[in-house]
Image (tube, rainbow, N blue to C red; front, side):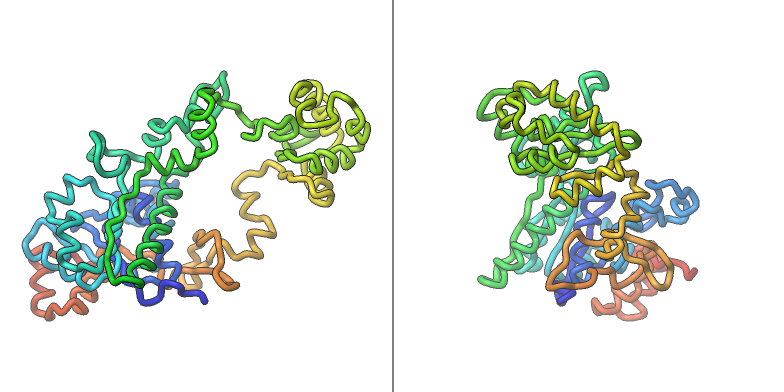
Length: 404
């Protein structure tokens, strides 16, 4: 089964990263996705993000391309009477609406959850916002970096010397996208049981707190304010962290007694197992500095690449520190087919981090669309005549991409 959501129709009224990624994930599982963009430039992410300036100028930035494949694009003026009617027809056609606009924006467009579900009572309306509905910040604008700051995530990243740091990738955008897709799947299952649509309220702030779940619980239970730990592991185990080797660095996740036993043997220090300082986790915590010194000395004897191989053979959780290009070249990544290559354009895109029923890959059905590439086609299947479509295009109610 490679199309678990086959037959599901999605209206993607989103912009930037989180919302488009959510709709992209649904499309990878077989949903039919129509991206609704404004006339003019459309999704701002078409023109920014990534290091290819030429693609950005053409409205096809790499940041946009990452979550645009498998969709059709219609460009309409939602502020016009005719454009608003087009949107109502789309909502009547759809199973799911994904949007990431502030509530006050939806109010101005007549697209609040009450209004959309009045058009289609079976609709799953999924709203992604920075802080969630209700409360004083429901209309506050937010990007990934703002939520990393507001949630406390940045204060956990880095060291006491560096101060708070943003994570190196927009982890909030993509984690929110996955959370929203998860919620949509649950709402669709619920609808299959009772026929009811649903309104889904996704908060980026709460997604950030969810990612820090164990840290949140520890603080609430103990009052201990978490501090930045650099490359040390969350487990606080002395044998867990990232350590320099003769060349390269090695991440170790030695948290259990059996793992410490395996580590001691693979590095040729079986004496650690009878050393009173290291005989159990409690003793190792007391003598963490001594253990770290000994571990650093022995790891300096070989390269990280060699240690990684030996650790894996011994069952020790370990990974050599790699750059992104190196990671993408891992045989495991290649074997899993995580990066999909479009046979027509050669564009290579990340897909989904799971497989259903042994699917080779969940790949997009179409290449990323140009702005308004499918406007006339979508208007046609919504029941508009050729005369009406031409009128919309000439009046600026809709916009059709020029042929390449």
